[in-house]
Length: 551
Image (cartoon, rainbow, N blue to C red; front, side, top):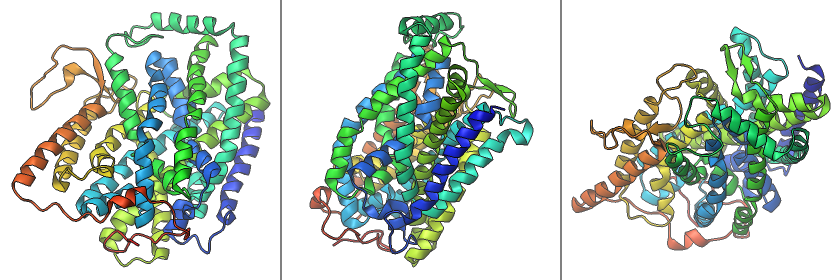
């Protein structure tokens, strides 16, 4: 047990958690018993709050723990996160402005609300909502796994059921303050989280290379390690078999990023359209921090760090690489601060993710199908309860999937959420695709995506299912036909499934239009996609049964 580090961690963590509970009184509203207030902070966040909120939402335990651990274990493949982050913001700059405007005019709370209004299709909106819920759970699981790794590094590493005690602690703290304060809690805590992370990372990337003999020595140690491993995919440079995977993974992840409901939640909580514009310009500053964090994976190799064995599973926990690096190279005080930064960096996005998922359940399933006459108070109560259940699903993802690298939890979620791109992102510009064609494309793409994920093995656990998101072209099959038989080149399966989705959507659109099938009513107008906030800071909520409200 690392007692000094645990004391520092506990003091900071308890203080920040208390801040989360007090957030209910920050920028107070008449009542948090309204989805606009609990789930979107009243849509009143300005530029600075939005910057920290979206940054805290997107730069998560995935950034601080999972991707550096991937570099430690697999090498250059882990650098996919850097071009993915660089490409994402210019890619979504204009679509997000359009989404903010149309959501502001019609009071949309979720991407499924937009789909409901754009196509007049409750079925398509339901599919988008279910996709968002399912894709978010493994992403929340990644955050909990990161926090669990920090607690395990400090000595909370029991066997059997006690081995998951850190996970239970993380779950209870997260559930409590999310339920109490809604989106205000992670928005307020994000300030503290970012300050801690910047301090920790900047100190680490300046001090550790000096201590370990410079970057040349660090890269040399990483190269020597990968040269001694049997896997041809590992190395400080990409091999011939994983270059296609790298490209499709980076591009596919960039396309998927703002399709996640939690990413849109931070955008929709913004006060004005120019707040979104300024943030899309400023957020790439986080990519600099991301690049520095990635290099810590190689620093851990040079420092001869070894992962802690998870006594609950009996296998090394690669998530503990970065926490162990800080524990071994720094004193107790700084290590405790670093552990707190990682833990808080996991809780902030997990809170936003669970809130976004709860909004989907409440607005697009509960209100649409189960309780059309639900009052705002009933909606808010339902969202709070749903946020708890989503976290339970996240815990089950950790226990049941157990991938080779924790980053695969996020990548598997990306394979799923990217299937909503035709219905959400493309619909911001054109309604050419038929609504039933989009349903057919979603069914085809999602079915193929889940099948490909199912046949990916996990060499770490010996499982033959859900081992990651990369598959050799040789194993791609289409109705028994293997178009790339014998090829060991790997590809990101989310990209493959999206191509299937788009092809089916286009072909089905031609067929349905030729058959004269009704296309549904579009409740949005061209001007809605360029509107800014009016003097009223509280837009009307989505209508109870129609799912839309216009002014």
